[in-house]
Amino acid sequence: MPDDDSMDVPAVLKALRAALPLQQRSALQYTLASGGIVGLAFQGLADRIFGYAEDELRDARLLVEKIVGLGGDPSTDVAPLRWTPDADQAVDWLIESEQETIATLHAVIPETGEEARSEALEHLMEHMILRKQSQVDFLLRARRSPE
Image (cartoon, rainbow, N blue to C red; front, side):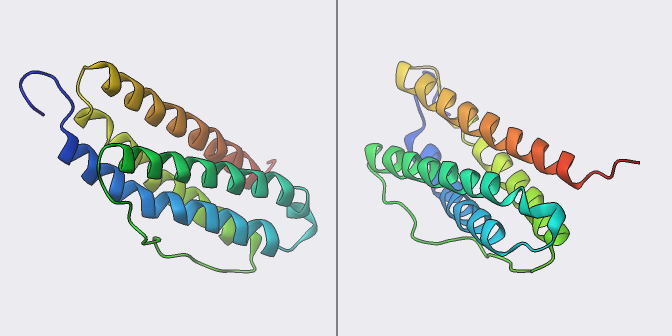
């Protein structure tokens, strides 16, 4: 980070471009899970999981807007997806992939600096992380057995 506490734009762009393929995967992975999980125990979760997909897509757009706003080009890559009809495995993969995405979004924050636009970007990342962590917490509770 520059000594004057201004935003390190190249580093921020690199970090945001690393997060975008994971964020795009999130939208698609939740969509696959919501439409494809089977089993009575998980049918009640399908609509909630699809709501997560919609939230993920909105956040992907915010990442694209920020990358373009900083003068960068957004990645068109999507991190690898997984498919399984097994609801337990699908939820486990959602948890694992979201934890990876949360860590990648968190890695943006140290590069943001201390200027006003830096604070705005830091808060955006924190908001995304908070929302994603709430989703992960819900999925972890869904996977826990009542014993």
